[in-house]
Structures are given as C-alpha cells and as structure tokens.
Length: 311
Image 1: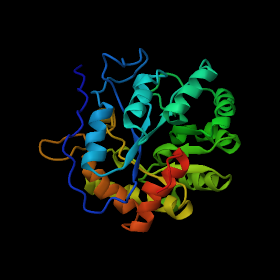
Image 2: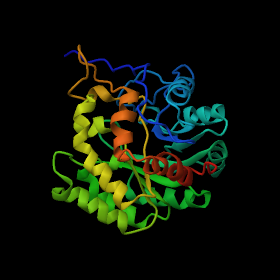
Image 3: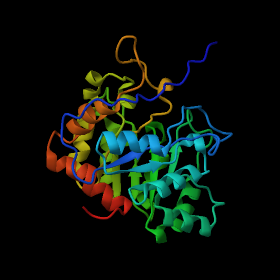
Image 4: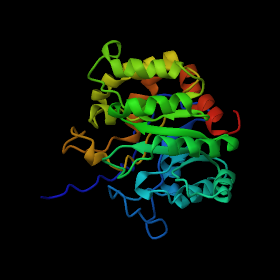
C-alpha cells in the first residue's frame, strides 16, 4: 500500500478582504521543528513538514497582519516543549504558549515555561494523532498544580468521549478551553444536534469555559472554502452564547491534513487550505462580518486568556 505524503503548507496566503483588528492574536497555531534541533516524538502518529517560528512569523504576522500568536504544542513533539519555549523566546512578548506535560514535570520546569510565556496545558483525546490519552484523574492533579500559575487546561476531544470529558470540564479548578468547537458533526443542524446542545449547556454550567472557533476544514473534511459554510451556524451559536469567551486562529500549518481532508481545492486538488482563505471565508464570517465581534474574538478575548498586555 502506498502511503500518501503529508501536504506542505501553502506559502502564499490570499490577501485579506477585511481589516485585521489592531493587536489581533492567532490563538491556535503550531511550531514544528526544525527536526535537527527539535526531533519528533518516538510516539508521533504522523510525520509533518517543519514550520519554524520564523516561517510562522513571516506568514502570520508580517504578511497576514496578526500582532502575535499562541503556539500550541503539536502532538508530534510529545511532551518535549523546547520547540514552544524556543519560539516564545524569539517572539519577544508577541507569543504565548500551550504546552503538553505529564505528571513527571517538575515545579522548576513549570516556572521556567511560565516565565517564557506558556499559559496553558493541552490534552488531546484523538487516537489518530495521539497514541495514549491522559486519564481524567491525572488531568485533575495537573490542573491543581498549574492553577497557581494562572494557566488553563485545553481539551481536544471528539463527541464519543463527551461522557468522560463533561465531568472533567465541570470540576477543573482552572479555566478550560474546548478545542475546535468540540468537533461537532456539522451535518446535523445546530438545533437538532444533541451533542452540540449538550456542549452549550456544559459551557453555561460553569465560569471560564473558552471556545476555539477554528478549522472548518476539519468539520467539513474539505479544503474548499465554499464547503465551510456548513460549520458557520455552530460558530455563530458559540459567539452568541459566549461572546467574551470565543477565540480563533488559523491552525497553521495543519500538520495532519492528509488524514482528514477528503475534498481538495483547485485543479489538481490540493488538500491544504490556504491561510488567507481561512481568514476570509472562516474567521471573518464566523464573526458575522462585524468588526466589533472580530475585535473581541481576535484581540480582547485571547489577551484576557493568555495574559497578553491589553490593547
């Protein structure tokens, strides 16, 4: 069987059709490699192309107009967070980080990461990209350790793990970020989607639940912007219910897209969405093309969560 190679990120984002708000933060992106300094984890389930902090700055900040970004530890680097810390140190205050840790992490290491700009810990419950998942009781213990630092817990899960995740989310002592809108099945409309309605109820059940309105390509399994509208009602519901707790970003460089995307864009079909398309056809319409809503989503809300200075 021939294994399809991973798709390289498009280096030429389409020009924005809207004005990026001052101080905007891309709240979900990854830095990967270079592999001679930051090797992949032996447990990695995919082998992406590198996307260094410098490349990400050139695209997201210098070209697209974000003020800064949040480096989320990619699962392919495991719990070796040196790639995140290195990026934060180079960005000189224009980046925050979300790390991946286990219980073996020392208090000194937590403090060192905090001083570099790490503000959260991520746990992924996705067998296709993470070989093992962290038991709920360990997440609780780690959360108690990071609470004094003011960090949050970022949870990436699928609908079939909701019964495990819901009690964790209700009882964590830290703020909670639900990654990629909780990955609802967007083929089932919001008003008929029992899982998504339960997510909304969960979000209202406690303070400090944040939502990443990101990655329409993941829900629709399409790299074509014209297909992403199916996911917009879910983004609009989150913006309506939680206006002060919705954040967004590009997910650049979307390292495992060849395992997710079925429908490519262009001719010949390319499975990698364009970053400008993500901004123009997802982030901007998710904010209902309203500059005030966009400012909350990209500037005010992420600065509150990740402890950037106010703008």
